[in-house]
Each structure stands twice: as structure tokens, then as C-alpha cells.
Length: 110
Image 1 (tube, rainbow, N blue to C red):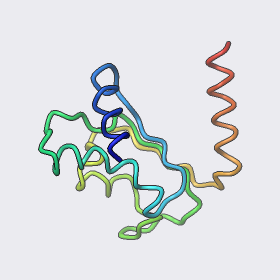
Image 2: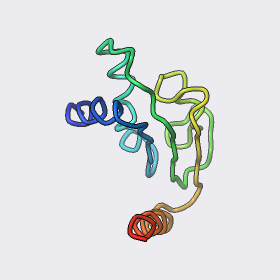
Image 3: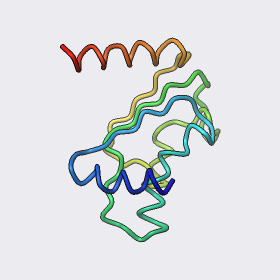
Image 4: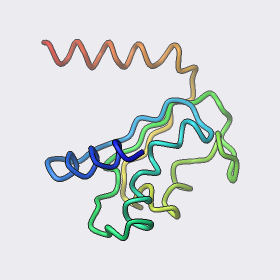
């Protein structure tokens, strides 16, 4: 978490940083908590929120659940802002992630 926090502080000064969450639950949500940790626990209120959020999950959407929580539930924890673009891809990550990565890599080298 300390390495992620240091990286986020440096990188977010240069450009907005988004978050791609693969799966749900505590393990899937761990990395996104670096922003509230910096803002709330460390008192670094000028730390920018995540610039966008996308979650790939096969869990059914369910308010109050952990794996199926909607992105809007992350607003109250200061993980995301009200105006943060939020997307949920309801599918099996083993299918979707390779397609996304292939597209990004092909676009990067085109």
C-alpha cells in the first residue's frame, strides 16, 4: 500500500489516474482505497480522487453487498467523486480482460 500511495501521489500530479477493478470483494477493492487513505487517514486533502472507474465483475448488482456494490456506493467513502465517470462490465473477467488489454496494446503500437 505504501508503494501504491507513493506512486499515486507522484503520478496524479502529472495527469489524472483511473482505476480498473477486476472482480469484487475486499481483494478487488484494496487498491482503490489508497485515495481515501491519503485524504482521510494521512490528512492529504489535496490528493485528487480517481479520475474514472471501471469494474469487471460477474457478481449481480446488489446494494450494500461488497462484490456487487455499485460504483456510486464508493462516493461516500471518498474513493470516487459524484462526477467521476463510472462503468461496470458485467461479465467473466477471464473473457473481458484479455480483449481490453489486446485493444489497448494494439492502440498503443498503431
